[in-house]
Image 1 (tube, rainbow, N blue to C red):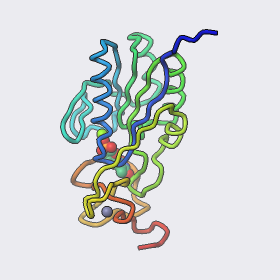
Image 2 (tube, protein in one colour):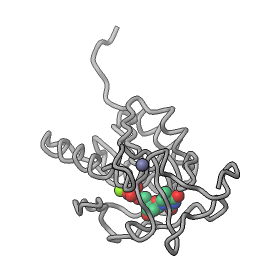
Image 3 (cartoon, protein in one colour):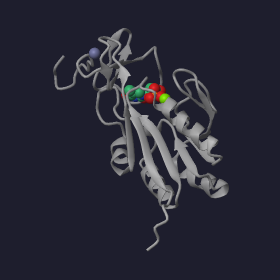
Image 4 (cartoon, rainbow, N blue to C red):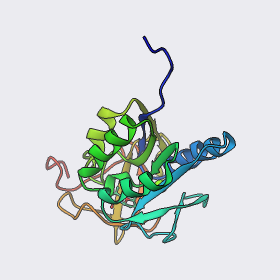
Length: 197
Ligand code: TMP
Ligand code: MG
Ligand code: ZN
C-alpha cells in the first residue's frame, strides 16, 4: 500500500462580513509563500469594491488576483501554471460549476482554499456555499462582532436608507460599511421574514 500522503483537498473559510475571511485567506497564502510553493488567486468580476485586480480585506491587506466571470475560466490557468494551491475569494458569487471545478482541482492534488459568505443578508444560505461547506475537508467559520450589542456576530445586516433591507430585496448588492453591518442572531432584523416584523 502506498502510504505517502497526497496533497489535494478543499478548505472553506466562511462567516459573516467583517469576520476576517479575506484576512485568513491572505494569511494562508503568506504561509504558502514562506514554504516557497506557488499559488493562483481568483476573484469574481462582480466584486470591484476596493480594487479591480487585487483582493483586499476590510483592513486593507492586498493580494494580486485574476478576475474571472465564470468558474470555467479557472482550469486553463491551472493547466498552464501548475500551482500548489488555488485560492478563490468571494466564492459565494460564482455559478454552480465552481463546485465541480473545486472537486476536480483537489482530485488532481491541488490545495483549494475558498473564502465566502455562508449567509446572505436575509440570513439564508448563500448560493453555492452550502455545497462547498459540505464537500470541504476543512471548514473554518469565523465570527465578527455585533455592531449593536458586541456579541459574536454570525450574520450580516443590510441597511438601506437607515432601515433594514426587506426579505424580498435582491440578494446581490456589492458594498461595505455604507450598506452592511455585522450582527448577532438576536440583533439581525429582516422585515418580511417569517412575518416577524
Ligand atoms: P466580504 O465577505 O468580503 O465582506 O464581502 C461580501 C460581499 O458580498 C460584499 O460586496 C457585499 C456582498 N453581499 C451581497 O451581495 N449580498 C448579501 O446578502 C450580503 C450579506 C453581502
Ligand atoms: Mg472579504
Ligand atoms: Zn447583537
